Image 1 (spheres, rainbow, N blue to C red):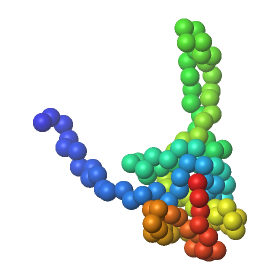
Image 2 (cartoon, rainbow, N blue to C red):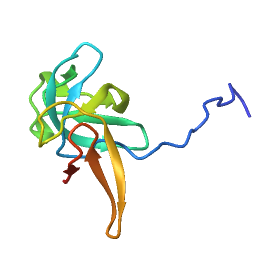
Image 3 (cartoon, rainbow, N blue to C red):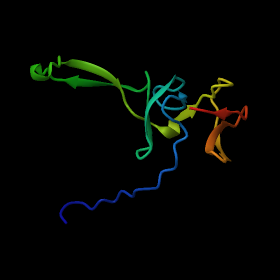
Image 4 (cartoon, rainbow, N blue to C red):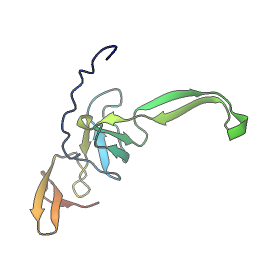
Length: 119
C-alpha cells in the first residue's frame, strides 16, 4: 500500500548446468580463468559458490558468548551460473553440456567428446 510497488518480475529459471562437486572454469569477472570445485548451487537465484573463487572480506565483531574472535574473514561469495563453464572430467577441457533422455531419466553429456558426465 505504502512505498514503491515491487516491479521485479520473477522469471522461470531453467535447470542449472552445473551441480555440486563439478569442476568449473570462470568465464568473466575479476576471477576470469580460475578453476574450482562447486560447493553449493542455488537454482532459484541462478548462482553457485565455487571453491577459492570470488572472495569477499567480512568484518566481524568479537562475541565472547559465542566464542567468536573479531577480525576480517575471507569467504567465497556466490557467482552467476552464466559466468561458469563445466570442465569435462574425461577430456579435461571446458565444454558445453547437453542432456540425453534415457529410460533411467535425463543424463548430462559433454558436447566436445560426447561422453556422459556422472556425479
